[in-house]
Image 1 (cartoon, rainbow, N blue to C red):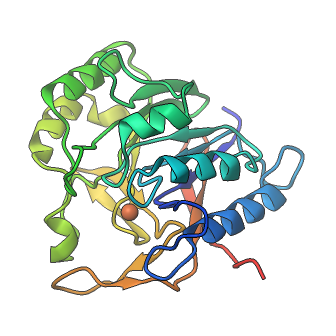
Image 2 (cartoon, rainbow, N blue to C red):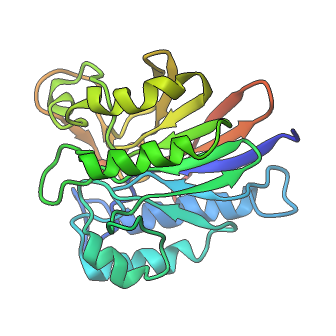
Length: 261
Ligand SMILES: [Fe+2]
């Protein structure tokens, strides 16, 4: 296969215009990321990409005005964006702002699409009103059906990490019952090339049951690496992932975003 590239963005936490999150204009931080991406990754540029996946927490708290602003900001991307749900999202407000966004038959914001690198499968772990993640039997059934459709490589995306990372305040709001997810994935583990997640607001890489897994700080803020309650660094620079895939492997550049003047 020819080398193929896409972007991983996460946790933009867009706010209604004029508002802030932890004293930060998260819309401006996302705007800076999009400007950097447009300058670097447009078609014909030196590192073009086919699409972006944004792994949830699209907004601060599911506000319709935040989704509307997000839609405007995302129009500056030089590629299509696949949007996912995080615990700070609201499916109804999201659907109003993004009526063409794919959903599964039960209404969860889950879909799958083919790429030269394998099939991307995007999961919806939102349990509305809860900070932790959930994959109910219905959503896991949808995933099992997708995995049964072919035997090719898979890139899996979900907002909540399926494993603890050693930050207690974040580990208590990870994906609940990750064993149920693993039960679905295990028969296909050899062809799941990578798992991408968000939620932690940290650049993290490792593996889960042997499957490579990674996340990013995202564009809104950083969570400190320390015990106890999560503490945030709202002024840490935004980042995004440039994901390059070829036949032999996957490389992810975690790129820091300069803030706009
Ligand atoms: Fe978040």
